[in-house]
Amino acid sequence: MFEELWRDDRAIEGLPIRLVIALVVGVASLSVMMGMLDTLGPMSVTELDVAPEPEVMPAGDTDLTLTVVDPDGESVADATVVVSGGTATLDGVVTDKTGDDGSVDVDVDPSLGPNQDEGTIEIDIKPPASGGYTDRRANTDVLVLAD
Image (cartoon, rainbow, N blue to C red; front, side, top):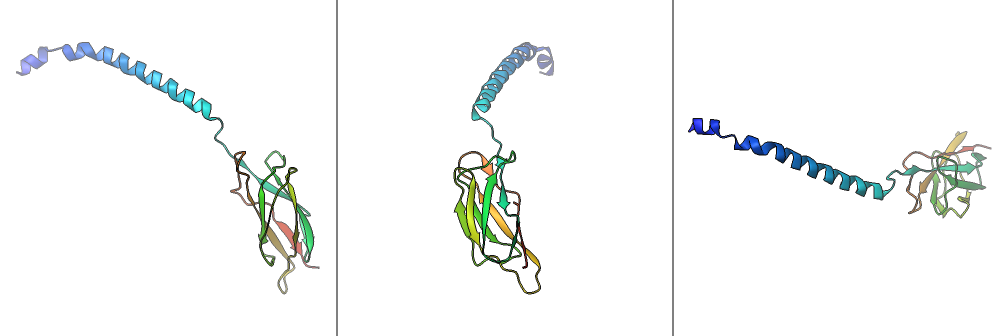
């Protein structure tokens, strides 16, 4: 029986054509997948930051202008800004949405603790639903100084 299998070379005859068929099917599948990936568009997201004005302010009632910007410095409309106390204290959380120019004016009244010469106000951004934006990194804080 072993001698019969040794002399049977039919499997060797079919092997090259099977390899060619597998190669053609693989290349065709790869080209279809690459075409599908090309239609998806960019899959990257753009990190946002905030540009506060002023960046340094005294403790007490102050108007703060916040501009949401992309890495190129272009303003971003329809982003929601969330202002909260960091090491400086605010009475609550202030939220507002940026206008067409990418900025919003908020009124804050930070206070500092006893024997505290400075503190910070933290600003977070909820990016607009469209545009591929994100806010994963820390944003610019506002420094609050004692009078």
